[in-house]
Image (tube, rainbow, N blue to C red; front, side, top):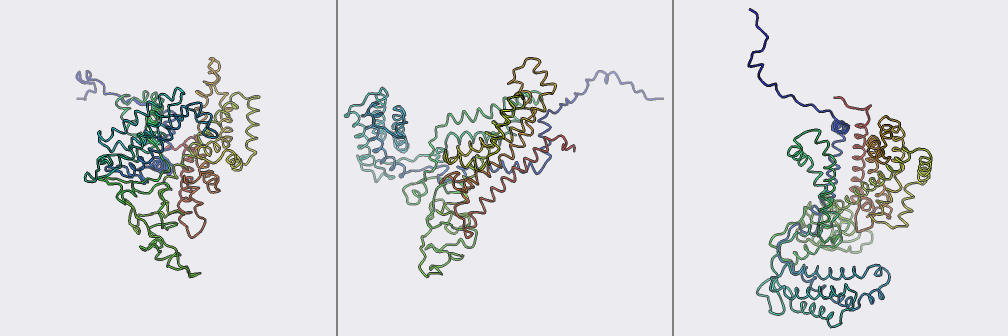
Length: 590
């Protein structure tokens, strides 16, 4: 008896098993999968992301300000109290002069500040100092400061109309500030309070590092946090809102890109911090001498500021090196600076004991200056972390500028051809006849060295290579069927160029951009090394190299130079991976 292959009635009525939907990969899916298979490029990208993370979040890694402070800050209160009297006199003089008197008396740089801006600056100077004081006072003790602010608001409202304030009214502001100075001197203990002369400060909680952030720093921190957390929130969005549908996920790429920019921009606009880039904090010295009384204080991992000098530690070797040991009197125990007398002349060596402030490792602790100190005793590791912001940002922003210019010029030349191509091509050749580095030196000499100027100048003179790449791609693509169809349908040229042709010409541009970032970093480093780049005390890796050219101070040259070399190498490795992934002849099939 043969077995029948006919399905039973139950089997026939059973529903078909769900079929797994397969999705075809688009161009960028293929590119990303090819990049993932190149392990060297992936690891280079990971390390670069780590470098940029350190640069973006530098305030939380190396700072002389605490991340969190809970206690009484006598130093800040006293300085605000003294300065309040000075800025109140300045505001009183401004209000008495009126708009006409102000405009007649201002010259030079001050003349460029409008009357409204002058009022806002004086009001901000007073309110900032009052805010620093009131956050450590009780409601009853704040009454004189509230009265002073009311007088300030009345005077500012009248001054905005342009009229001069009466001397008696303007002098009331000075009298109120003088009364605050005479009657509100700070003490930290209730037993020290003298009615009518002193006030007891109250414990307050603050976050000095966060309060000192600028709008730009907040923008980039939020942006980079979104980048670092992309695998997490992208998975959540795809599952919760897009149902893991590949087609919907592809259509949502534009919305995700907009969110990448929009959310950090909103955070930056709404931020109300008050940055003080090179202001050396008084927290550590105050905690050391007792002027700041803390219940809880948390410093960053590296408790040294960007411009904080450490007396007695100029050109100190890395703390793990045996030549770094110093006695209590400030003399080196071994190495080229060993002893109390100069071996050549026999004269006594000048010494200064190392000052160890609150939160810092001990004078001979291995972690005190892990990479050594510079000519002013500033911690080199801290300045390298902050210098990464400049060096990495210059390369990235300069590349964005040159890519933007190169794409526009190359697209116009390649798409339109004819006289447009002729003019743009001749202009490209003229720019290329000048040596780029010397052209940058000339432009810096005219506009002056600054971060923004360096970024813009490098971008303005380095776009020609990308323009020629884009021109060549457009010449190759403008005869393709999809371009001809777009023109036949009457699509505007701008849409055809940037919507249809440009995405297909971006491959070589992306490769050139990765190498362009490395070139920008090298250019900035060379400019700073020559002394015409980023100016001190703002550090960059190139500027740190010129702190000393003596072989005795080897750590000054080795560590910044090593970071420059490593960053350029990583960008080149990643650029090679992108180039291979975009080259159809080098596709990895396994």
